[in-house]
Image (cartoon, rainbow, N blue to C red; front, side, top):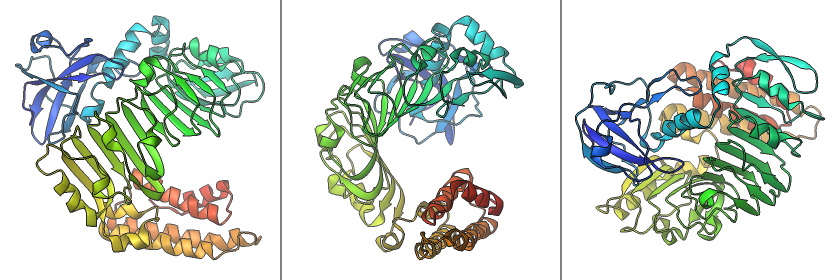
Length: 480
């Protein structure tokens, strides 16, 4: 257990090490990130005089980076406890922000990039931008936008693009794009403030090596043939087909990769991998990744199992979601590198065996959302099944409401011109049931509201209700 004064070094997302110090302790630890970066793990004396990291990139105002983390949360396996120092007066001992250990170093990277890679004039324009309205002309005539607009969707922009029109938006950091390149790459290279890109249906060859992107989402059917990534990329999400080959710094060592279709050639250095799975996840499906340290798997239907994880000798963190097809024997063998197993969504009949598997082995086991086999037999594919984790009675009532609506929608003939009209009272009854659950139990927060919406739109889609009409109905009927 960490105590006041303890100093921890942690690897940074793009290489090197940062450091932090515990400045207060109780139910949560108050942790101040230090103004420190080094290529190697520092010694305790190296950081003795380090002050707090002051964050003023983008809309931050220069306050010290200090967060509260759960006192019982395990340090990441690659963090290093350096020892204990007196807490210097300039290090805050209180925080209004909540965080966790895995994300503690991000602000070090973002602040350094802001200072070293973003031109001064761009930084000044960002800070000066207010929340008024500006005229933006991207080639189709001027339109009015907020001067503080952070994200722009150009997926449906037809014809040539007047890219210099982006300069009217000094706080623009995210773009969405579809199809051929059409000048996109040059626009990104000239604007290092744009750090996030979603590209649908990209061409066969995508070379982003000279851009300042931190995050990239590629949405493709078959996937591009070759993708060259920028050296500062930290997150890559491959939706749909994966590229045949990827070129990345250190073969992807600094990238958190999320994929639905395996790991493409060229990313064998990936340490942090998230898989959106259907069916079994095997060593072969993970590609030739050599240095895997963190693996997250989330299953959709069918809920499969695991195999071959013992082939990854550095895998210290394993996170599973909706792991209803996983048997205890499929998990990494005790006595190996595994230090943290976190499961969200599991069969309660298997929970005890998992805990026994890792008893006295140094592995921290966290299981949330364990459910009885009999209950899962009825509700496994119910999109509201996890509501019982927050409130048993409310969750069971929500599942019953969805199941009733689903049966009624399935009985409709979607080819009947009157199916949409027949679906309306079914969908309204479903929303009214959720209204009643919220009125009685008050458990539909922002996340549950989104899940309720997804469930509603899934039902509406099954009845052939046009999306715009479904959105209007949901907005009119819901009271949560």
